[in-house]
Image (cartoon, rainbow, N blue to C red; front, side, top):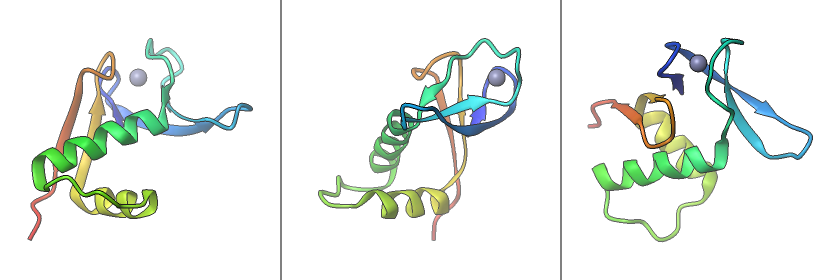
Length: 91
Ligand SMILES: [Zn+2]
């Protein structure tokens, strides 16, 4: 995942709350941390919308593997309403 404001990769962050976040590597970035579960849900929905009929039962680990295969990059703009996906060409 990439920061659309800084054009650098986001890095995972784990806070004491045990909730996973992604944060920008640029310390001056204006973007707040984004909640990983929320972003990953949005990405999965985008994937389903593009490639699949909704799948009832795909466990989280499978989702992640599928998305790693299918996605070149996700760029998050100023907020989560501005997500940009670059998909790989699937066979
Ligand atoms: Zn940034």
